[in-house]
Length: 157
Image (cartoon, rainbow, N blue to C red; front, side, top):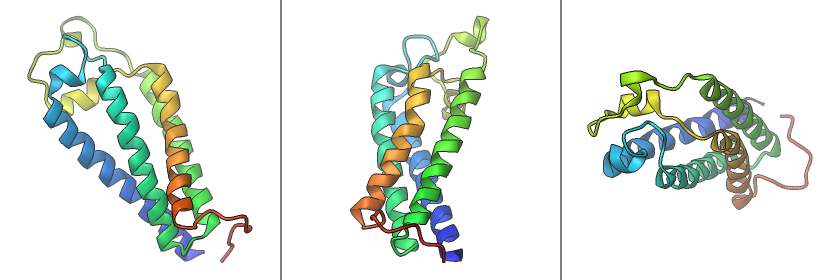
């Protein structure tokens, strides 16, 4: 059981590192003008496409790491999938409840810092719903690639 807990933590940590690192690099490479729609904090279609790809890739790696650390335990994979789903839903609910910037704060300048971008970005509701599902399937696929998803019952070590 201890190995499975460690596997879930390692898989989630791998996902977090990839998401933070890649999104930071992508934002710096794209710049605010391509990451957002003109003069606003509404994310661009390009950013949405990149975020879906990066999110799936991070979840894929997280699932693979979980499978490796757990020695291919289906229970660990299911636990990581549940964690990704629950935290993704909570994150989406919080983002949907976040008030959009108004007045002068709603107008984005060309030199928007990475921190300002993260704090003020406005994503469409459908992507906030899709992200946990993408993560769920990414984790499952990553684990399946390494045999961490089989017809055996979950391990209860």
